[in-house]
Length: 141
Image 1 (tube, rainbow, N blue to C red):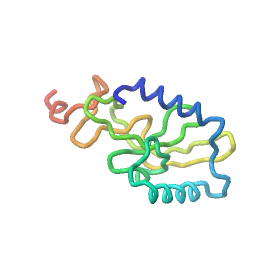
Image 2: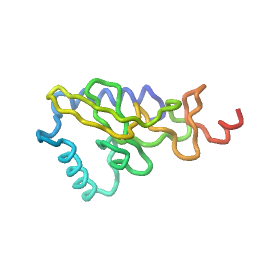
Image 3: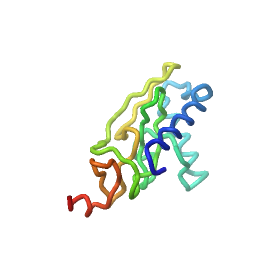
Image 4: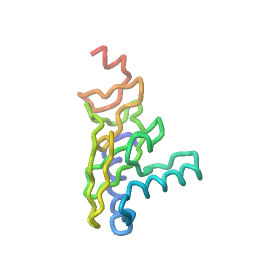
């Protein structure tokens, strides 16, 4: 997805579809249940699925990061690193989030990004156009 509007629309559709049907594990330690489901998923398929749930950057592949959307009841997901021309958020640093859900469950993320991943290696987020550009282009300004 090359622009922020498409990403926001896709996130809204996913959250709308999941809001009534999705719930967190009913255990004392939802993180443990979630992590064990990740291990099973990785064993079954070596290709990372689009919008895979995550709690840390280690849950995502090297070419993606863990992001938290801005929607109510957002589900942390792995998204691809920004490519040349992709929308980006300047100075979007990793943060820890604590997310609360209507059923009382909470999830804590570590080193997650708000809304979008940073630009891929060799690229830089240009603060004037909010797009990933080649690092040499950014230094030439």
